[in-house]
Image (tube, rainbow, N blue to C red; front, side, top):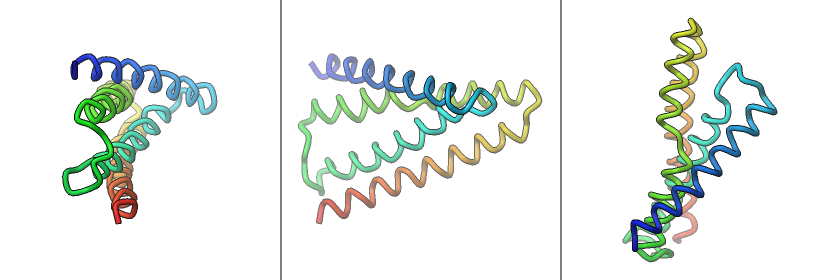
Length: 127
């Protein structure tokens, strides 16, 4: 049954990712992968916060199936590291080395910050 929950969550996360990246493309243009950056940062924040909230030393807000649905399914389908890799490679191949470097640096730093902030926010809620 857990596999079914993960699959359903993955479908929902993938649809949400598609919607977010499409919106960013319409609003900000195709010169930089803003949608993927947004999805990775917000997904990192969410996974950090939720992982801390449902950790064994925190408040167990989710059952194991619900945890798999959200953390593995929804957020696994939502975050887009494979898309990030392909978009960065395409920037390199097109000669946009500065944009490729910025995408790597921003993605790594902001996603780590997002995960840390989510974990810290959950720590405040766990008090």
